[in-house]
Image 1: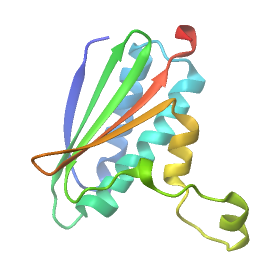
Image 2: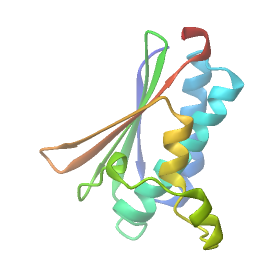
Image 3: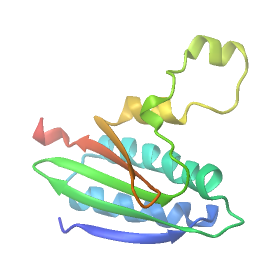
Length: 141
């Protein structure tokens, strides 16, 4: 699979473009249907977080998504300008409390941590958040 990158404007209408790109690259990498689904759900969540919380639809800033494959590790790298936000540092959600309080939102990072094998974050000096979601493909374990 060839490494490939796209740039998208921060508009919720671009969620399907992001998903289609990531799905196509995961399939090219040989991901199983189950892995593709986990990758899609996790990446949809992070793309929506970037658009809704980091960039906002009003500003129409760009963010990028790059997909690569390295020794059975399918990597999706997101980069977006904005304030530092490290999802790895966020407190783990207690599902019982979450549901007993009838919360409708707030499970995205929990889902990403559950579905992906690795999550790496760094804040680049030029004010860019970089998040890498890694799925070790089933045939590579």
